[in-house]
Length: 521
Image 1 (cartoon, rainbow, N blue to C red):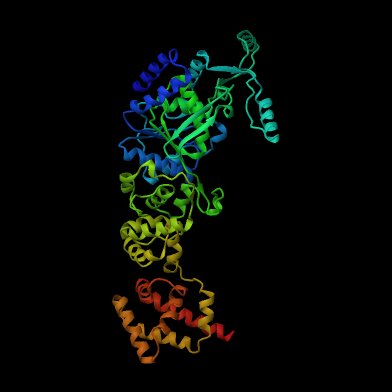
Image 2 (image 1 turned 135 degrees about the horizontal axis):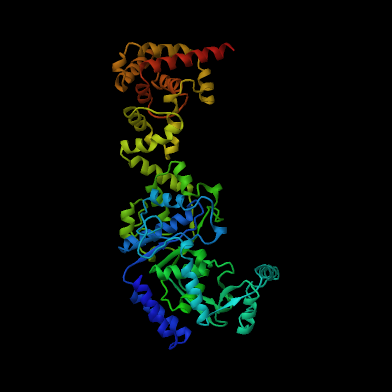
């Protein structure tokens, strides 16, 4: 904090000696040498959900900070009620923690440059607003917001760039005093240059130029006392000693305005990097119809945080060795902004599901069972620990998300399950199948319950097939339908061993009765 204030005082002394353009250049130069530690912030609005785009932004900020042994700061931008949802900040904090992106400073843990909620920093914005007003770089605007909104709408309809006409810029002090005395509400606007360009040096996109004519005299503090996004952001980034602002490309147009605010206050600006957009496969805006879009949805669908971290890292960044599967630690070791592409990234639901399946299979069995248990409990399945381990062992290669586990295992818990319609119809046409199922039952019955394992079951079935002169598949397929209701799944003998002798025989009898009944009808 002291370092930031010292830089502020030093820049203020220069204001009277260096014209505006030179001051900005001097501040840019100073920013390169002044920052001693990388400090990166993630600053969401408390909308209640953390979506893919924001999560990727947070991730890249976190990776950059960790790769430089820097600090990752969480700031909540909650001054605009239109951007603040009822859910608040809790889901955001929980989502970041679920992904494993621990922050060093934030609203829940404090830090040396707090508070970390903008709603608790209003006095600071008013202080720096007064500074801009008294320095002559800003002025009060008494224009009616509703009238201005109508003018902007008219400009858009007429194909013109909407902007403020600077009506209040040259009002005299006497007129302003009269308006204040009359109780006329007023906002604070920045007195922006009317010609020339401003240059943004972007860490991903290179040099980007903006015309001052497109910026107009934008509002810093609204008539109700609330700061605008650009003003609060610039003040906070300076006072929180942010060295690098890494955010989505939709904020690129805000950057020239923030640079003008830095110049007006004598602040050395941070370095900027704007991440590419994330598009749907058809290159439209990503929405729910393309798959999960919020972290909560990913959690509910059984995605692993490590898989999501891996996938989000690939949305814009490439590993120097070209690999696509890597740990967060490996990403940190190799992360740099020069490997972030400026081109839009395309979301691929199939790829993230494939990655998740890879991470599921790589989990130790006990860990996989631990993570799958909540999904089974939600369905009403609560197996003992040893049985859960055995069940997950037979389906771990057949699920790509944890929420698929209940469906993959339901026949182990349900007794009156339906049969696959196509499979049942196919077996119904086989002559003598009920009698063959009776023979299967007869082959299994002599096996003691305590020895009803994969080896004994397979030996009994191979022996029966040899006696009958048929393929083992001729009895394996109908038995699979009998014990699971399905025509595909894990190894049949594994299923039967897990079900146990009594349940297996009962299910074989059930299918034999169903086939006989269907034929009679």
